[in-house]
Length: 442
Image (cartoon, rainbow, N blue to C red; front, top):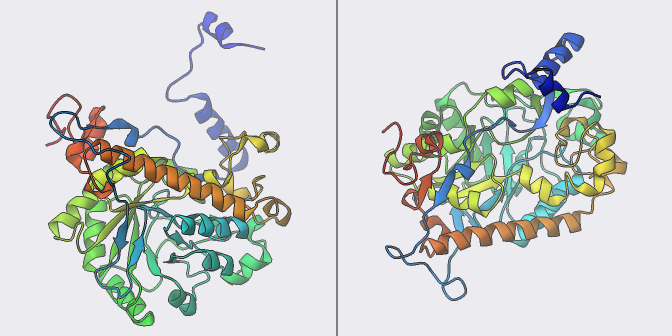
């Protein structure tokens, strides 16, 4: 067997442009004539929240005592037009993930975990399940281009409605659900033939621009008697303009999803080469809201795409978000990618910590599958407990950072509390490079 040392002695050097992963991708395409489909999100290195640091208080700022002074975490979403805005206890919500992409017990567990800590869940493509509605104290109903599972009665049962125009992993493209995950129940909810691959539409069938979106939002308000907040979700691309148009169309909440956000399945070329990083999208969204005079007042901003811990939450809030949404991290908290299934991941040609074949429906954890045997392995009560623990830890971490910066509420964090450690991150986030007052590009 040739080792790396043997190759070095022979003078062999891997190409940066045509590395082994690229060569393997070319060979696979040549062998099959089919483009690669996978789940998860972008794997390429991108400027992210790790490239930002907080300036904790010392002399010029005063920190709060962690066990004696309060640091609040609540947030109200959708108070602009809706009779019943959402009052959440923490600024971390669960992003839309469909029944179909996920098993029924997994959707139930998301509802259990979110409800235990006072936050919301989101349905995803394919409609609302009784398990999810029954266990979610606050449930956001996604209204997607596919219209799969769309039901006016379910709109009324929801606590908010999210009109999805795009997703960070695939802005401009529709999702996929392979036939092996379209069980009889999924097929019935989506009015599809069981076992046949499904591709979702990439745009809503009844509108072609912002004026039509205004009409659609008004229709949804009328259907729900103006009770529910209306969200508009966009994949991060031309974020500044998209956010302005969403606000003009009447959105109560704008959700911006960066390219680090995951997906159940789409073309890998989409995941890795379309969209902009979450870090670059937030300041554009905030600028748009500020210019319209609605930032932190009339319209709320939710940010998603690669949120992993309390530091990420705090940094997103400091840059101007009102709340964040998590998807991939929530699945990991439920038990996905767990080392206990290492042998089974190996049988799938993967390993715990690397598994991204959500589209195949063979998840040994029973989370991203419709296989009854695999799904039965997953305990929604235990999964909900794990998710609640994770959400509590994220919130406490964000509070710890806010107190260190002298803030009595996590949403009082601001760009002035941050510096960047790379030029790229400084330019994207529009904050100074550490040790300087220089913001590249300004």
